[in-house]
Amino acid sequence: MKMILIVDDEEDFHRVLRRMLEPEGYKVVSSLSAEEAVRLLEAAVPDLAILDWNLPGMTGLGFAKVLKQDPRFKKIPLIMYTVRESEKDQLDAYSHDIQFFLTKPVESVVLLAKIKQLLQ
Image 1 (tube, one colour):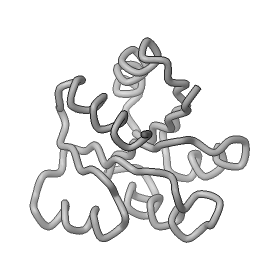
Image 2: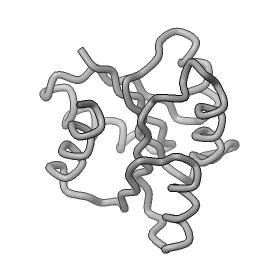
Image 3: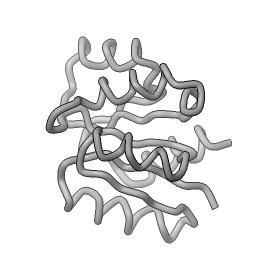
Image 4: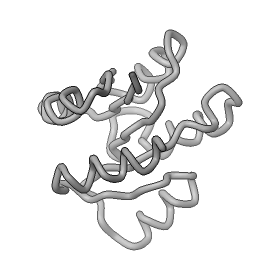
C-alpha cells in the first residue's frame, strides 16, 4: 500500500483528502506543520507528499528543501497544492523540485491522476 503524506495547516483539508485517497487504496499520514512532518519522516518514509505552501513556521517550500537535501527523502515526489497561483510562485515551486503545482480547489480526478502518474 502506497503511503501519502499530507502537510497542510487546515484540518478540514486533511479530512477531504483522506476521504478521497483512502478508498483508492492509499495510506494517508497527515501533519499540520512542516516541523511535525519532519518528525513523522523518522517513523516512515512516504511514497509521495502533498504540501501546502502557507504553513505556520517552515513553509511548504522550506519543507521541500529539507526533503531534497536528505538522501533518504530526496526521491519522494512532491505536489504543491495551494491557494497561491502566480506564475512566480509556480516557478519558485518547480525550482524546489516540486513535480506538480496545483491551485486549490482542484477536481479530485485531476489530483488523483497526478498522484497515480507520480507513483508509477
